[in-house]
Length: 128
Image 1 (tube, one colour):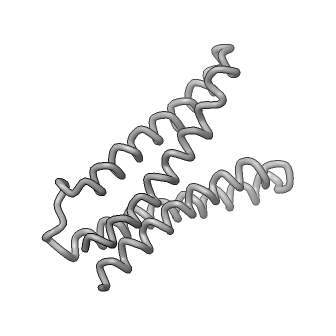
Image 2: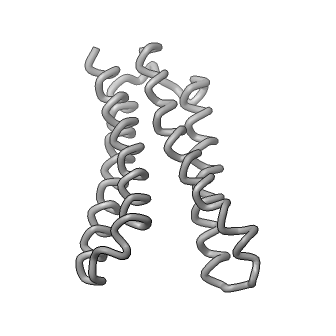
């Protein structure tokens, strides 16, 4: 029972971290000065690091859980794809190649995929 709870917390915590980062980037950017926005961003970075640690701990407590589990594999690949789309598009936008109309929409799609990957972990708790 504890294992299910830990996986649930890790999934919700990770999804919340992505949502908080998006909120800061879209809603707070025009409302906070650079100093406070930096503090907010530091908080979201730590939130995400903690999310990963919670997930690792939750999975490590029960050795019967393996990487063969389809839910874990699905989350792994969704997180990987979302991260490549999200971060990759941001890196390309920073290079100012002139393809902003093409690259720009990829960023929120990557963010949504990462949120869904974290929420996918909620299905894992049913199998524990």
